[in-house]
Image (cartoon, rainbow, N blue to C red):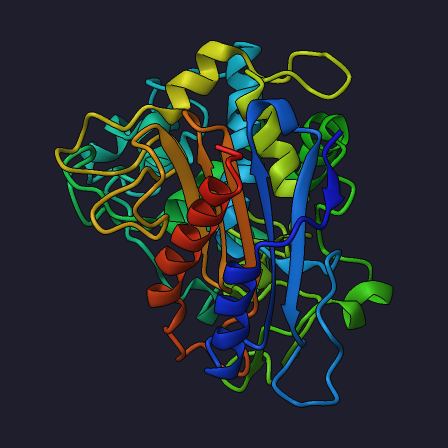
Length: 372
């Protein structure tokens, strides 16, 4: 079981303290797992406050954040891996075999019958990247129907376009095969086996005040968003969706990363994912040409949010609220960064420049300490 320690990372901490002063985000937690012989402990550090006001609560090492699109890998992709290992689905079968309505809702477009599960995972299905479905769909059922009926904007497999819509469809597909909602399935089959006790959808209302707010939503919900999912489409779905909705602390994603680095073995010694499935999902997609996507995950590109020192055999993902997880499979290094950079509104994009510097600082300090 991965436990938190406090080793330091003074240069990285100073970098993040500067980011808080520069209003890149009000606060953050980062966690670092390094070395195959030290995967039972991870360094966790907290910087800043919940908001920019000096009387705001300080961020602590165990503070829970809205993970945003880290949901795509820690929940939805992980669920697909679990189902694949148990031969309950296959990557190259058309989505319409499980969800006939995906093709039937627009029978004039024969391309829809060629969209596969692999394409949804690698963001090459031809579905649009983002649509403000919440403006017309007013509940979970309507949201799923709207996602399933979105017109393709490209031929399947011809173009890579990061797609929330594709992962809404994928989350629904997982739920249909599993026979239950994504939150309960992931809690029982994934999070509980990895000791991810801080991870889950729809936080208890009693915990909301202990979660940093993500935005003053002045356009849709007309309130401060704190302890509820930031993403509007996921909000209409009740906070449980394939593309967003998961909350967690900085340590739990490293518990997941440890399972990946340990060839799918859980702390109790059981096999959660097969080594073949892990390798398959970490392999960069061959199509479309030039994509950096793997199955569910991203891999380092030029330039990359992972900086300059993560190997080509690395997988990672970002979240819109200012979160990230990168795992270097060669060096056995995993790094989580959780922020609420969308506070008080989502216009601030400064984290894009910070992320590679943050990851470079981590790797330099690891080398200085001779950990890797």
